[in-house]
Image (cartoon, rainbow, N blue to C red):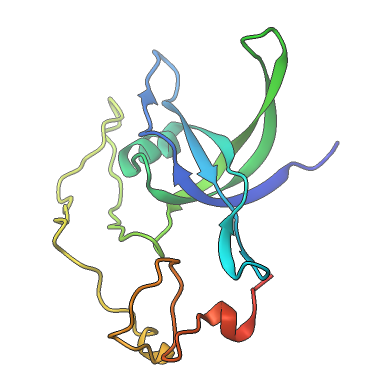
Length: 182
């Protein structure tokens, strides 16, 4: 019997998850996650987006509940789990294939966001989640400074190039100094 294919993807949530509760069954959630690879085109000297790939992430039980309570449309996430493909009928009568991940781990990608972690306590009788003590950060609160920013010796008066890259005093990005990572 073939071994399951385990994958890890980094992407963004396509829509705010909806938790489905069915009588006598564990909670269920299906959420779409998009990944768009980026690469540095040496010819044009610009970062370029590759083709966006969409994955259906389907979870049951406590993980489904935790996903629905933790992420929203647009959130950057990491997903690890078993990859499979689901065949479906298209509107024109043909068929298509949807990549599906059954996650063993799902979390907020904290290099792009700030997360607040709390231990989940569930009421055994109805499965409800205790959210007491949940701290909500205001939009005005900022992340603490990154100690590695000083290591880049960046010019604080330099204009942001808008490419998301860190630039050195001479205006070069890390990719321009050492080459693309791949």
